[in-house]
Amino acid sequence: MTTSLKETVGRYGIWSAELRSEDPERRGELDEAAAELEELGYGALWLGGNSTADHAAPLIGATRRIVVGTSIQNVWQQGAARTAASFAEVETAHPRRFALGLGVSHGPLVEGYSRPYTAMTGYLDELDKAGVPAGRRVLAALGPKMLRLSRDRAAGAVPYLGTPEHTARAREILGEAPLLAPEFKVVLEADPARARETARAYLARYLGLPNYTDNFLRLGFSEDDIAGGGSDRLVDAVFAWGDEDRIRERVTAFHEAGADHVALQVVTPATGDTLPRQEWRRLAALLG
Image 1 (cartoon, one colour):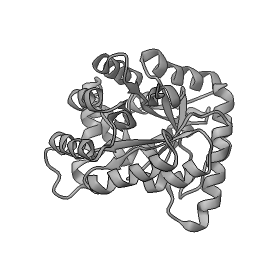
Image 2 (image 1 turned 60 degrees about the vertical axis):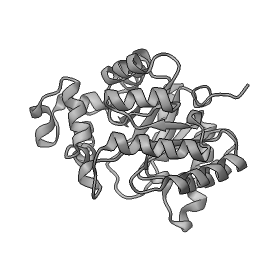
Image 3 (image 1 turned 30 degrees about the vertical axis):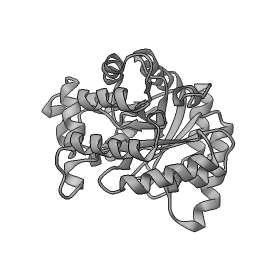
Image 4 (image 1 turned 60 degrees about the horizontal axis):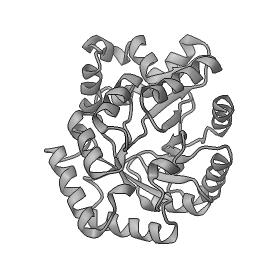
């Protein structure tokens, strides 16, 4: 019997845009970091940005068991035929080690953005024809329609920038069987002012994207919460910060709301492509 994606990713993973670097001079550093994350007990690595199987393949090759997924691959920028071919290459070399995470991105970021739900269903049709199994793909779903599509035509959903309340709603739509693996941001800082400053600086990039802001409004946040860089209420909902007990409690809240797996993104004041390896170690230790 084939092991499902839900059974292989474990309870915790790491979400990282830095691990998808295309700089060949960093290949050794990235592979070493991936191997350490596996040893630390994380069950999956989720590559941020418009990542593809080509970004995942070297990390899979540098590790023994950890699942590597895209979070997400932009369906507007990567053709389905090439996606299917890349999937087949990785799957042949490393069976059941790759998860194809797909998303429709955001209107302000994509020229000609139109009818995203239709674009996703058409993309999935092409993947079906090319033999990419539904059980190895997940969707970056926030709203009810995309969550239902994640249930019906994928292995589940990988929502980004959500809350435990969103996770509970998503689980209700998905039902029990599909994978629900929300991303959640962590600032390993106990001082409220410093933690919120770091969080707010990172959150700013998302507050002009309607897919996220519409989701916040559905969750009961107001326009005032979204304005001005985000209210403390909003920041505290979408980031974990504080002492170890508080961070552990915030992560646990996602599991209690119905998440199978939480993709943890460490956010620091550092800029650039620096890997937060010390923070990943601290996070692994506090999660046990």
